[in-house]
Amino acid sequence: MTTTATKPITPIDVAAERAELGPAIDDAVLRTLASGQYVLGPEVLALEQDFAAHHGVKHGIGVGTGTDALWLGLLALGVEPGDHVLTTPFTFFASAAAIALIGAQPVLADVEPDTALLDPEAAEAALDGKTTCLLPVHLYGQLADMRALRALADRRGLKLLEDGAQAHGARRDGLACGALGDAGTFSFYVTKNLGAAGEGGMLLTQQDDVALALRRLRDHGSPHKYVHARIGTNSRLQALQAAILNVKLPHLERWNARRREHARLYDAAFRGSATVVPLAVAPGALHAYHQYTVRIRGGRTREQVLAALAERQIIAAVHYPTPVHLQEAARPWGYGPGDFPHAEALAREVLCLPIHPFLSRAEVERVAESVLALVRE
Image (cartoon, rainbow, N blue to C red; front, side, top):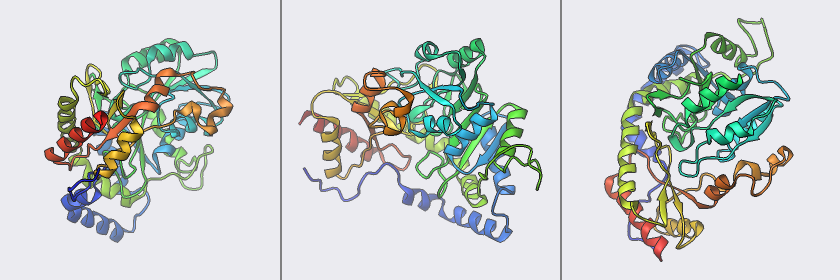
């Protein structure tokens, strides 16, 4: 089926964001270029302070990418080669790969089927004598049950690193990413709720010693020039990216509120459907809706719906079609099909619908009506 609509509905709309903020971004970029300070510097410091304050956390440390934030966070928390780090099988692969990058062993536990978030009870059951750290993922813009995971970490003497790559501005029980964990990580990749014009990352922490370790690790382990206290790397946030993010940060809450408005429209449209089932919002959660995700159950397959939406110029996505433990790179970790049934079912069924803040009500309704119609065809 083809559509007479001329404007595609896409997962992000960089042009609309540019139309809203273009002059301010231009000014910030030109100001930074004129300053001659292109790595770290005042723009990065301002972003670190304001992003941390926005989340109610003491320290912000800007790094090169969200993936760097993960593995540097693990190093700063003292995770060592041979340690076991527990995380989820239903996430982008970087969450587990960061563990393996430092020579630790990813250990997986299944997710809650209604939220797709790490199940604290399954996590506790998967712990062993070598486990030193928990790494929950705040998937799709909703925080995992951090109170339960913090309690688990404290009982077992574990570190707790939060993956908040999709959770800018999200909260649960009034607390944001990084508030209960020993540190929390973020990505500023272009598609995120707060996206740079390229790559960037941030860690938040309440702990002075962790912040100090991270600032050294991102700069070759150096407390000051030509002095190296430990082995680190080069992962310093670029000033141009920080300048752009400084322009966008004051708009984050308004954009997130707009995403929640879209989510309410989707929720109303899909209420009562047995074939299009939205993921649940946990009690006490303020969802940032990096993705609005439904499960396609019955009727046409998820792949058929995805293809038919594209014919109508509605571009949906699947995050993620293959769980972590079934990736080729994960074979050494010893898992196989059937080990995490909830994650595997989600990977077969999830469909992420456009929800960026520049959609109109009519566009959201068009997406919802199309999904419902196509499932029934």
